[in-house]
Length: 267
Ligand SMILES: Nc1ncnc2c1ncn2[C@@H]1O[C@H](COP(=O)(O)OP(=O)(O)O)[C@@H](O)[C@H]1O
Ligand SMILES: [Mg+2]
Image (cartoon, rainbow, N blue to C red; front, side, top):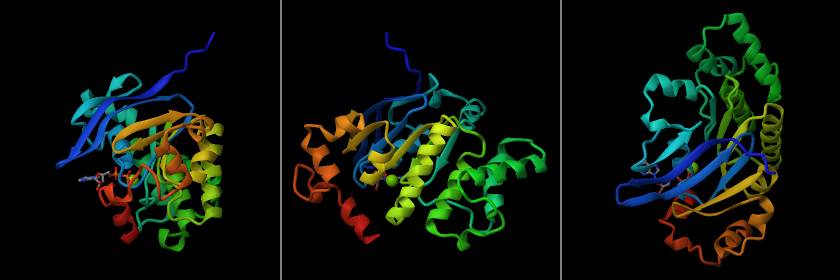
């Protein structure tokens, strides 16, 4: 008999419009405890918007998001805070505070959400830095760090409160292939060592197939494919094949993508 896996996140019929544009169009998604799910899709297909709904930064126009079976948009702030503490977020650009050194950046969530003794907090910071391979970098300022190191500090901050779920928005974007590989390995290590449920948004194909237990492909605000890496590689959907091969020719039309590809090229 199959053991029943615990569902930690459920997105049901999520719809979001920005102005006249429907960015998320009836998205349904289930994330199980302990797995690493990669949400892949082209620029502007709604990946970050979906993540922001799951952490309640955005409210749905319709549909709902259940975390641990609770509809997060129905929860009062103090109830949601308890769930928020179980979630870590690694933002697209690492989002470090440039005026604070590495240690203070990682201390932020600890100071905000706990009443631990300063000495204990400092030990936690050291442990988290150890986990991301940056022990001894406490006093450096973000401007003194490379792109990959900034991401790792962002990761150390995201795991400061020992989250059960961690969200990564384009963790390897803008990194050279070797540093990207280091970040991928770290994501894998953390998910195994700490048994964290991980949701990773990316369009980096190498990363997708390195870290995913399960892949979800978003296209024009809808989930168009879902499965294990092998199932996705063997998908008969031409859009999926075009995307994973990075082919300019196919059903996904560059000029119909709302200009997001062009926008990204010129950013
Ligand atoms: N706060 C917002 N207001 C208006 N439009 C937005 C907002 N956030 C995102 N969008 C638009 O929604 C679409 C999806 O954006 P996003 O979720 O950031 O895409 P992705 O992360 O997949 O690249 C884009 O066309 C983007 O310009
Ligand atoms: Mg994004």
